[in-house]
Image (cartoon, rainbow, N blue to C red):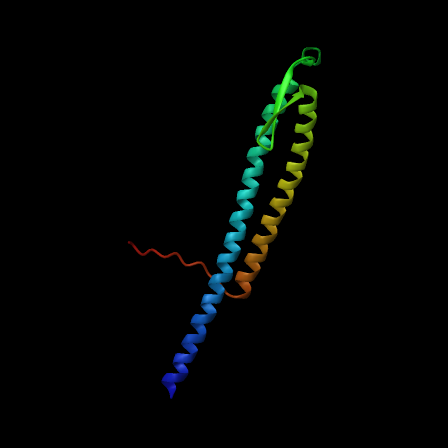
Length: 131
C-alpha cells in the first residue's frame, strides 16, 4: 500500500516538474523572440542612419535633379533625395519607438519570469552530460 502512495506522489511530482519545464521553456522562447526582434530593429535603425547621413551630406543645391531609388515591397521606386530623406526620418522614428517598446517588453517578461521562478522555487540546473 505504501508503494502505491509513493508511486502516486512520485508521478505527481514528475507531472508538476513537466508543467514547470513547459512554462519555463515558453518564457525562454518568448524572451528569445523579443531579443531577436530588438536586435533586428537595431540593425535596421543603423542601416537607415547610414543612408540618411549619406544623403543628408549632399548639399541641397546639388540634390535637385538627382535620382534616388528606394526599395518598396521588392520594387525599386524612383524618388527624389529629399523625399527619401523624409521617408527615412519617419521610418527611423517609428523603428526607434518600436525598439523602445520591445526593450520594455523584454524587461517586463524577464521580471515576470524571475517572479515566476521565485514563486515556484525553480532553479536552473546545467546538465553536464557528455555525449
